Image (tube, rainbow, N blue to C red; front, side):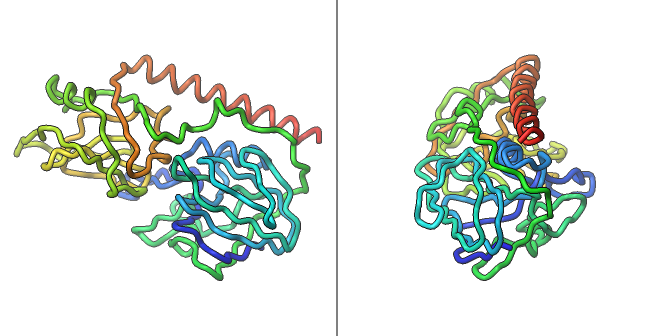
Length: 313
């Protein structure tokens, strides 16, 4: 069992997300899905097992039983009983020890995985916390002091003694280039206005979406039909300040959506923090598909290598 001594700024249970958007339910899931997969691979879990997502300032947790854990994501300062605790590796924690995750100088989020995967409320096939809907995860909310978490039983496993290559880490910024695909609403003028400047992430940023501080000339079409949304879409509201939709975005919206961040770059959305800068770079579908294939090939290679080490430990 894990006792939450200090909850951190916003610590929630997340997994790989839901596939119920046809019912109007947000996808949810870890904002940095690459960090989730790698954290789970390090402790021998399935890729989408439920874990903790920590944001900007992490929690302090006391373990009441032995566990194998890993933390992947932004470079949080972490200690185990006051001694430095390394990220991007698996480590054994003994009963009675306390893990403290402080803040991070860059990036925004990290994932803490526990061997076996956290037990959590599953809704629509996912244990992800939907903060606005108030369901999933741990009571549909962020952790508070005094919460107790448990995890599924799993055969004991020794830490593999391997580190994840920095080449696989989601870049934590502070400057981000997001590759985007142009959608039918991207007129040449709007595409040029969105892909030329450097934007700054405003304080209006959460798991639902993030707004930038700079504005472009907003399109106005009273006859426009509202279209479905997916995470990564770039909306242009009437004030002209683009919004990049995150994993908790609603399924429909009335704003024009001229761009969509390619899937290979979606993990970067989880590391964008207020004050970071970003640029949109338009790419064609063939490059978007190639980038996703390359990312998947690298992740699956690591997952297979760690799986082999776990099986032969």
